[in-house]
Image 1 (cartoon, helix red, strand yellow):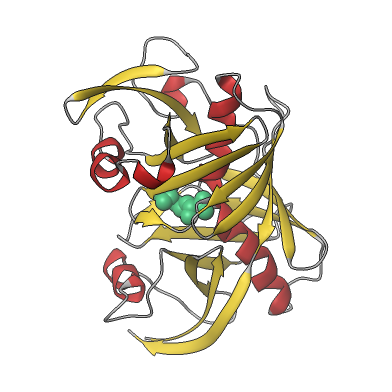
Image 2: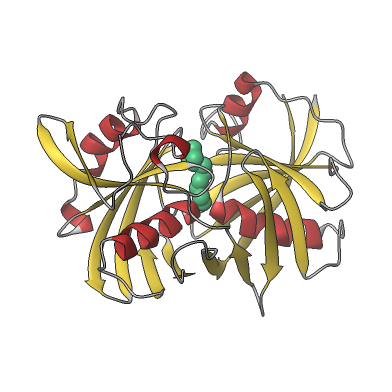
Length: 276
Ligand SMILES: N[C@H](CCC[C@H](N)C(=O)O)C(=O)O
């Protein structure tokens, strides 16, 4: 199959974007892994596919695959790139784009300049819906991992996140503890693991070991989940600058059922074709 694609990134979290409206696309998990492979393929953290909408009140269907071939519910940096991708390809001229992912429906708003603001919806904290194994909902949970006990928050932004507070993201055990918590039995669908350093009530440093992709330079849903976790612990205010290795995002959350709003840049790298 010959495939046209566009390579984009959000703060270095990189994507192969595929327009499945103007071309027939049949991707198996194996072909996703091949596309994502940084030596034998194009190379990316996630593959994002734009499809025709499945209902009249939605502009597009948006499928998200991790580099390991797993289909997932949501991708924050990907949503920003998606918004610019569909406008760049003149698939829409709207400022506000309604998309359906495996997690449900979300609205992408194009902010000024190259910044894109995304209403990521309200966080889900009920353990069974994250999903996370706990008898009752709490701001933090004690779990055993790697021979130690950790206080973690369990937050869903459509996709599951495990967030812990560390003294210094530079020295945090991301490479060793990340994969252990990603596959921890308390998270039946696995988890993206966020290591958050509190700089002030309005700024954090964050590193994320992503489910199905490993540590990435940035994670949009991870930034949202970290701010939610920080507010649940009363460590953060409602508007927070999140510094990731690839750059900074602005996350706003008023608490409760309010949506988490993420604003940040996107970048176009190149167009290409590949035979897979
Ligand atoms: N690895 C994530 C999907 C991509 C999320 C991330 N790239 C973002 O910007 O939110 C998961 O398995 O839920």
